[in-house]
Image (cartoon, rainbow, N blue to C red; front, side):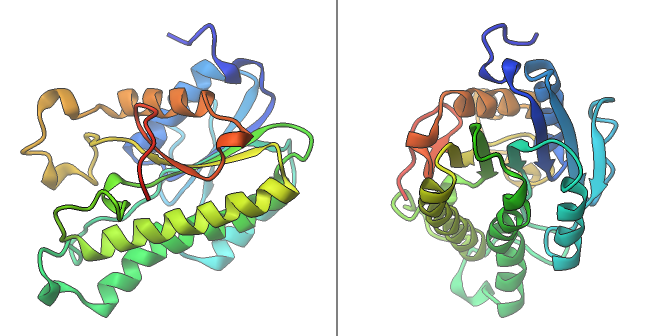
Length: 248
C-alpha cells in the first residue's frame, strides 16, 4: 500500500531511475504508489516498462558519453527532476569476479569496475544537472555498498568493487559540497540497500541469514523511507538501509 504520510506524495515534476534491475524496477513500482504527482522515467540498457505501466523508458548506457548526452536531450523537454535514483552497479559477470587475493587484481577488471561503480554516477550527475530545480527541493541518490567503506573494512578482498564504491562516495560527497553553494535545496545521498535478492548478489547469498536477505520490494521501501527523512542539511552523507550513517 502507498504510505499516506509520504513526503513525496505532494511532489510534482519528474523522477528518474537509472538502472532497471531488481532494485531499480522495485523503486519505480514503489514511486508509482508513493509519488503519484511525479512523472516516472526509467533509463537502462534493458526496457523496464514492464515494471510499472506508467513508466516512460529511455535506453541508456552509463559508460557511454554519447548515451548520457542523449539522456540530457530527452530531459530538456519536460518538467524538472525532483528525484534521481542511480541503481546501477557491477560486481561480477562472466569475465569479472571479486578478487580474493592480490594476485587476482588486473588493470582491465579495475577499469571496468570503476567505469560503472565510480565514473558513471558522477557523469550522470553532470548530465542531469541542468534539469534540476533551483527553487524546489530535490534528491540525487546513488546505490553504494557497505563494502565501499574504508573505516568498516575488516575483511579485505574485493579490491576493485570496494575501491570503486569508495571512489563513488568521494565523488558524490564532493558534488554535495558544490551543490550546497549552487543548488542549496538539493540533497545528495549514498545508499547501502542491504543484501538484496538480485542477480548482483546471487552468488554470495548462501551465508546470508534469511531475515537479512531483502526482496527488491523491501529494499526499495527502505531506501525511499531513508530519503524521505533527509533534507539539504544531510546532503553528502552515506546511509544504510535502516537510516544509520556508515563511516567513510
